[in-house]
Length: 202
Image (tube, rainbow, N blue to C red; front, side, top):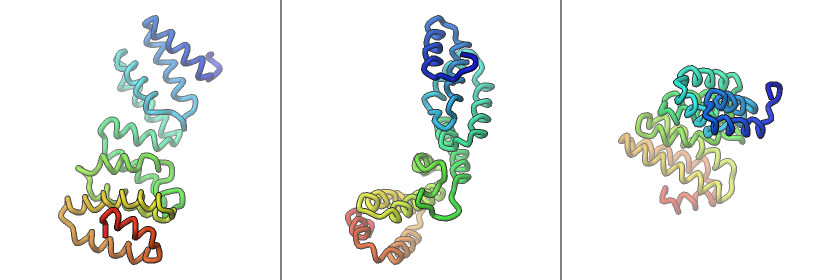
């Protein structure tokens, strides 16, 4: 087992170590499972390692090692999820920003973090409303470009969040200007305008 990363066997060993109260070796197995496939590592695995390391009084050291590993493996999505888990909204925003595409892409506005961008926006609404607005706008634009009723409806959900934040910061006139420009740019998309009307955006 020292030479292989068969995660099924590592999982079996980890569970046996835990049953026997051998937390140090259980932590070692959990770490090896987490690192076996860096791009598929999960927040659940991270939490498991944290729980074991905290019981051993080693969490500070282990966490630093994990974050260095994730940075090297370029798993931006998990780094962002962990930052949100730890209440580090500004760090999550910076990590998401590092994934921003230079141009609007058919794959979305954030290269390797598409699935977590909205989570960042939700977490940032209170402390960083302008950054949250920008994230929502980028996702709305992506779904508009993907076309189709379902995508237009999703875009309208995010636009509703943008309106709420503009109202929150007291810039209703900027919302009006933004929507005027959006409607003008997409005036040839009647289905999108219909979805906007359903969402009471226009």
